[in-house]
Image (cartoon, rainbow, N blue to C red; front, side, top):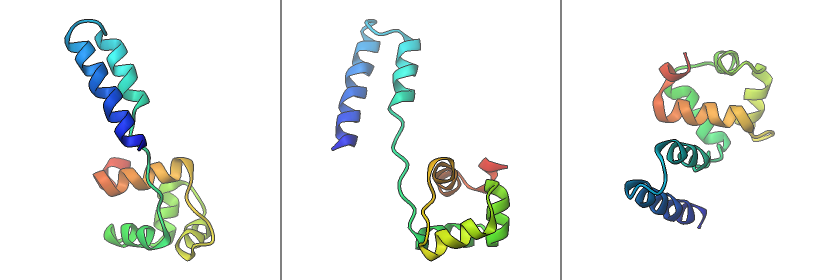
Length: 101
């Protein structure tokens, strides 16, 4: 539902921008506000991403500036990545390891 509302708003604002009623700066600000929601990462997905890039738990922890035990707890389902860690996992999954280096 949220996604369809966001798409509707963006389409309306894009039309207003094309017609000159919304300037380019406002358009960019609205686009920033409508960034896609970062999905949740269950343990299996975290393990899959880490192995895809051939990283140890310690290497992933170092990359994210967190403790190896935190990565271990994510992969065991004892904790869930939040905030910046979720965003970094999202970037890594979509754009590759190079995007974080």
